[in-house]
Image 1: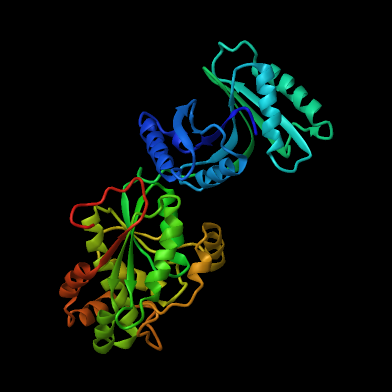
Image 2: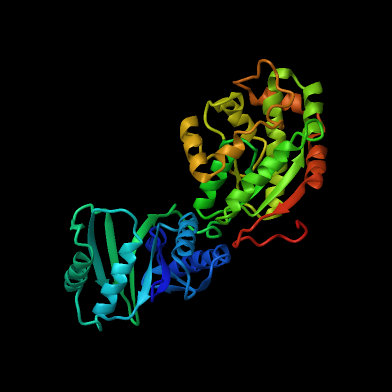
Length: 404
């Protein structure tokens, strides 16, 4: 067991480009990490020299520190996480910490030292620290070579006002902005592959995401609702989803299927979904809707049909996947951890009462004429009232009154 206190240094990029409000973004990321790392033995998290430092309890083992760093790297706003040690500002002690850190860096053949001092009250400059600590590492690992360009391992040494931080294992984060720094959005969330990825992309841009799931219940089973809950459990690990409203949509779909021209069913389903989602978004204080649509992927996602569905609401509609192909979306879902869940078959409203030949170039006047015969506003009120709410762990979310 090492004699030094373990730390995780959390680096960010985009937050560092902010101006006078930078501290607001830093504190939002700090609060998110405090909440999400509660299962780990975290003593405290401090802002230091343009990054956050997670201090772990004495006696914390390597695997626990590694797991904490792996989770932190998936939190929006984090550009990189480094596992290492806090030690005294003494070159011999720093060299010992560097040897311990490199022992936990995994397999490697080459290394270099990247030292810097943030306070000039430490007499030794960065170049001298590189040479002294690099010499100690070369002696401790005689079979490894020093390589200044693209080494397998870079040992970081950072000297701050009262301590030094030494690390060797670094892993990239997801980047972006901390959840809670960009307002709230309502995301149409199915049990499919695309919409969880779209939701995650908005969370990565700092939005608090509230899901709206349209279940085919009571015309289908409620299987899709369980898959959506599984997806939300994956997303909540990193604070990316706050709440899901499940709307029993099957009966209204059936009424549309019985009354509307078959080719227009999909567009009319979508328009009603958008109206319900907009009303829920307003109740949640959200400023936009989000969908997982990709241009031309299915019948509802042609340019003409998208124009018709957008016309149903006044709120802006974000489509972060609009220019992304299916293989790219699948790859992102696999990295996110939702693909296996989304790949399971579940009857839902997306496949319920589908026409044989859906319209791909709907005209808004024709759609409005067909919709005029339906009690759309009454349905919207009934569906919003019937929505069932489930909350998830999102540190940045503050529930609106009356929607618990």
